[in-house]
Image (cartoon, rainbow, N blue to C red):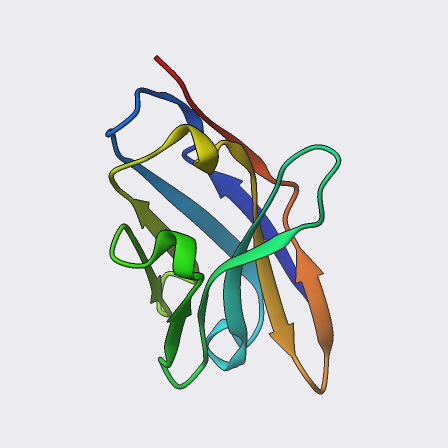
Length: 116
């Protein structure tokens, strides 16, 4: 089982940058497929970016070339570097961990607000 804690959210102007972190506690972090999701009130949670245990990476079309997902396995931390932020990126961002034999885990979320 993993416990996930996100940090790094906040208020940023359009065109700005933020770096989200997700600190994991528990065992076998390196074996988990990790992802960032986001959710706007009243809408479904959507996948933003994913990085597998084997370092395969994928992005939602809406964030391609603007966001970068990465992981530090020794530090058991997941990152999301967000650039060229747009008001449409405003959402609560959630960290997700999935390992077939164990299950799926979520963090509590961190608010990102892009506004002038």
